Image (cartoon, rainbow, N blue to C red; front, side, top):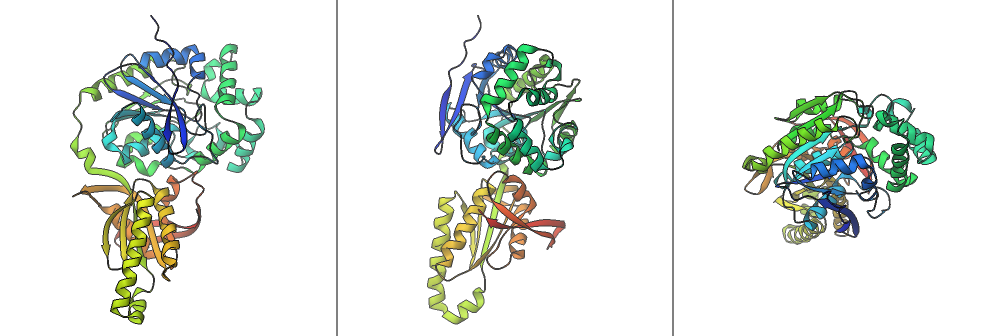
Length: 453
């Protein structure tokens, strides 16, 4: 007997409601991070997708959801960044009682999955990357970057043509070329686009994709990882998967024939079989304690501009009182933005965050808070893989963060390229400061100053 269509429920992520469904009772949870757009209820109107979901649910508990701004989840102003989306995934996992799951990031969802696995390895039993793209310029030849003169031109076309028959067919030719002559599927596909996102929503989502670049995260993935890609994928170039296979430690890579991007179209049985074998292995494997000793973290360093001269001007007692007020102000901001104080030395602070956008906003709030005390700070922010030693972050990423802070000017919040690439969609604006050498760190580093949050 066929399993019934699961009930749609909502999980609260802050003030936003995230639509999700759960199917199956397998020995391990599989959280499916959707691609560009989705609609959890409309999915069941397509027999092939419904059958694929039911097949997955025979060997796992399948958890699917619509990202905020798409499908049945709340529409929001602007577009969510990867950091906010991670909060949404954790909210769904909490709602269904999932402490640890395999994360399946497909297409656009792969960057999301990679960031989740590196930030929360203790919540990630394994990672599956299917049809993945990690940077805008690595989509397939006919996709947006290749056929448009600029990102703005591509976004204008989305807003002007989204949902129209011709445009839907153009996208279908890249997502599932084998279905172009299937009239029933063409109608469902077009309806799926329109009911999953408005023209403005779709353009905003694609703007974020144009700015995101998560290639630098891949070497930091320490959980068991499976990568599956069709060699002729007309949406996303296979170079994404091959690069990921080379840079993710211990990753298993399966390359399949085919042109279709959607995983339930074409030879979906080979994809499902690969997923099943991976999940069965992960389900019986003991968690690797070493995975929890390394985590992707964002580090923030601040110090007071002109502190020596100010201390001499005020005298020891008054300067000590002012430092106490400075420390109290920073600690209040850290609490507001989920930052963790790691160390304090003199007038400098070192803190860590589980998301770069929060770190940036915290730094800017600190600027405003200490300005009321007549003080000015400089700040530096970097995101990278850190070791956890005695519950504190350490390693080269921490050194890089400190060096970025040392390059910041008075009143400036300076960030690394990695930070900028990860906060796409956050509305944070930057000014490039060019390439810099960071003392004791190999290579040249592209730095950016925060202009507005």
